[in-house]
Image (cartoon, rainbow, N blue to C red):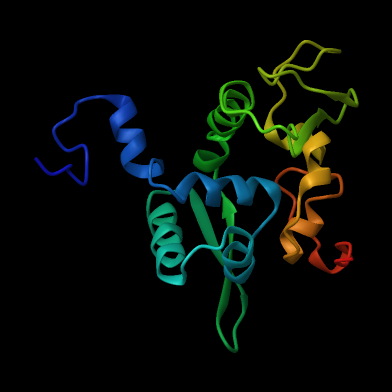
Length: 182
């Protein structure tokens, strides 16, 4: 029996969520927007995602209200993408899945990134809670910092290089300030 392409017969909130964000590339695109990636070419270079797949994923996320498309250049027309309030609400799920993988599908090198609660300057625990103020830090109060696994990172695309330095979540990456490959 062939595997279906959707969850149409399911009356379940998780199935509805997976219908939108459960495809292989979708949460990686969302993760990258949290990290500050905004432009098509940067998503493509960082994710090694086929152009047609990225086009389809971005269009679906815009249509669902997870991302917002903004024109940044008219000639030729170019857009960038940002998270809507609906998209920002995905942060706990994105963070939890990454933490789950660190525990149950670990890399010998450890986490590539850690997340620090900016007001307290403390790295949050695996539940997203700040050890100083005991709050679960929202994405807009987090700074991404290199984790112990970053030393094994071999990718040299501009996004990967920029992500090797501390960066506030949700703020666009400044790819011109990224370290140059050795």
